[in-house]
Amino acid sequence: MADLRLPTNSIVHPDKDRFLSEVNPFEAMMARFDRAAELLDLEPGIYKVLRNPEKTIIVSIPVMMDSGEVEVFTGIRCLYNTSRGPAKGGIRFAPNVSIDEVKALAAWMTWKCAVVNIPFGGAKGGVICDPLKMSMGELERVTRRYTSAIISTLGPDSDVPAPDVNTNERVMAWVMDTYSMHVGHTVNAVTTGKPVAMGGSLGRREATGRGCMLTTREALAHLGMPMKGATVVVQGFGNVGSIAAELMQAEGCKIIAISDRTGGWVHRKGIDVKHAMAYVQEHTTLEGYGVGEPIANEALLELECDVLLPAALENVITTKNAANIRAKVVCEGANGPTTAGADAILDEKGVFVIPDILANAGGVTVSYFEWVQNRGGYYWSEQVVNDRLKEIMVNAFGEVLKLSSQHKVNMRTASYMLSISRVSMVHKLRGIYA
Ligand code: NAD
Image (cartoon, rainbow, N blue to C red; front, side):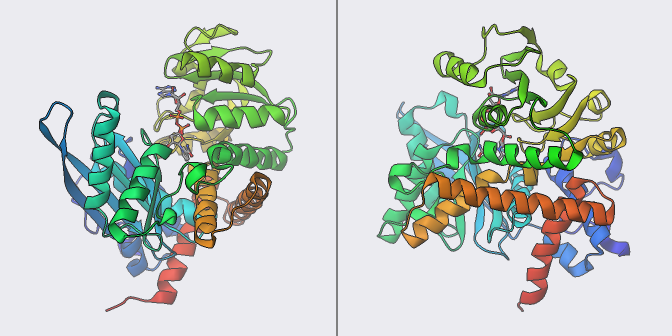
């Protein structure tokens, strides 16, 4: 295994470690991948295969803007690994989209789908643009031209996008329509996260938050801590954070702090989540909410609590603040909220981390259910969706926990070990096509 850490296709500085940024998403993902690969004693050949994306497409997207001028945007789609099934992963529209980020997120999707054992590979896409400065017409033209530019990879059997940062069910409807127009008939299984009226799944909107609640409930049970009365701090009060908070409150947890991009509110007696959600519905953000005391996002992360749910951004728990985290359990609702450097500090403190690829896999699991329903042309009730989601999340948590105690590693390393062993097993069985 001596060559396990050798770079394959990436340009690596001779003094790599010194230049390795704590927050580079691809390096952050690879640091975890390497540790798990080493523990699994992964064959060097398979290691090389899994350390590289299968395909990364970069396209120019010329678009006629409302002003009458032509603008050219850059779009990316990365299929990281499709050995277990069609590539699955979101499309994001943002000015800071980069190839490194898209590749890292595509790899993350590969491990996430494998950890919950759904038959998908991993992908991610993005368009470098500022959607907040664009009209609906411009967004539609960017979406359709991007879809058309990557059409050769798309398809229910090959690559199935979903919403991500700054894209939504409206955008998925355009992707699905553009693809369907190209192939000449309606193919609703080409995307997930669609409006329910055109084949979206019931329960999809709540799925990621529900998965966070379910894995937190399993973690607390394992640690012998009651769910009832457990204190919870939530960073990010959007889709994931607010729904996880609502469902945790319904299970008896006390939500003592919430925040969004405008700052946070701490109230030791407990925040009424439905009331806060109604406030955000009316005012867009938590600004001026006024229940309890205001608190900055950085200080909120360091509050004493049973459960901390980072559900906003990546890289919020770093080597700078990890020592100050006073939660007993961290449930990673967001993708990549903890840096690789911070992992060791949290371990030393005995914090039980439910890693992102497990904690927030509820969303992709119900996306899989949506694809299954589209392909079968038979739709499930919300209860059926929720029951099947629970079964998958609870099983996955149990499998990761078992591996973590067998190998005496934390839950993150165990999650990577489980997913990498699943993906590598399929590679071994399929062999290398020559
Ligand atoms: P969202 O846009 O609905 O909500 C994001 C929330 O984070 C908002 O309340 C926003 O105000 C807040 N926020 C933004 N900047 C912040 C800052 N600097 N400090 C504190 N809060 C800030 O997004 P979402 O769908 O809830 O996704 C949240 C995270 O979960 C992202 O990392 C996303 O990649 C991840 N995730 C989402 C899903 C899903 O199904 N929605 C699935 C897996 C992972």
